[in-house]
Image (tube, rainbow, N blue to C red; front, side):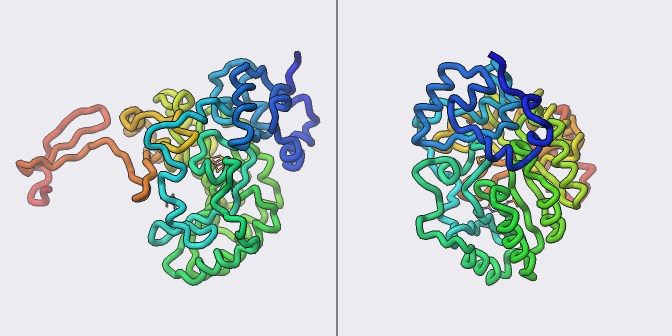
Length: 373
Ligand SMILES: *Cc1c(COP(=O)(O)O)cnc(C)c1O
Ligand code: SF4
């Protein structure tokens, strides 16, 4: 059987955001037109369909390997039976988003900044989503049935809290909103004098780059400065289309940064991570965070050890361009905790010991002079 590919469609159609959305893949039959689905994948899609949402854009499906089950894109987007395993200590909200919700949508956890959950919809439901309960679970979202459509109360919270100077639009994917709603939201935020940074956390540049339309770019550049943080997890997600979407954002004055998640079998090796950050810098995307994968219900099977994460960081730090190396963090109830190998040590005897990226050790106590530990 011949599978669908990008070239099965006229270019103009393929590059249309509406076409990509209208043709979202949500069934076994839909996905089977694109790739050779294994029995286990078919079974998982069927078994999980009433538990978690399943949605893949034609664009993202076109990047999947037709036969290889270890394809990093397949693993991120196709349901697996492992999602129904119960892992010890797992939680639907290990970072305490819910306890920090001050309105229906505003999470205020850090002093100067808030996460604003403007949507619970995504163009592709990543199987490893950190807010899997909110975005992907069929049971519900953080939004109660009584949630007001207007977002007036959320905006009022931000307006009345002058300590907030940074608003992170997140979700779900904020760019799932229509342009009019998005413009309404961003213009209201920009009219608040104490707001400096507006950021959008969106996976559209990776999973449906056709969303970055001239109309959207106009909105984003009108109410700038706006920063976009996206999520490339594997070098094979960097394509002509995703690079073009990033390029147009940058040309409209919108810096693009990347927040990867460390995922077992997808990018949990030094080689993959090195290739990813090199490719990101090539398309002018700055690696920002590498998230340790949390123990989230339905996601735990993607976890690796912090030891492995630290080893990867040691292999990047000093060996690669400084600004291409992301900060490795584990998200917890207490906030994001940076995980950094130890390079600097003050001993009990008052000595100052350093080591470099090549593990060369030096006692720099005398060099430090009187300004010791
Ligand atoms: C991650 C996060 C932020 C943003 O944190 P940065 O370290 O500034 O990127 C803000 N609010 C919440 C609730 C978050 O989880
Ligand atoms: S795009 Fe983001 S919010 Fe949506 S499913 Fe993926 S990780 Fe979750």
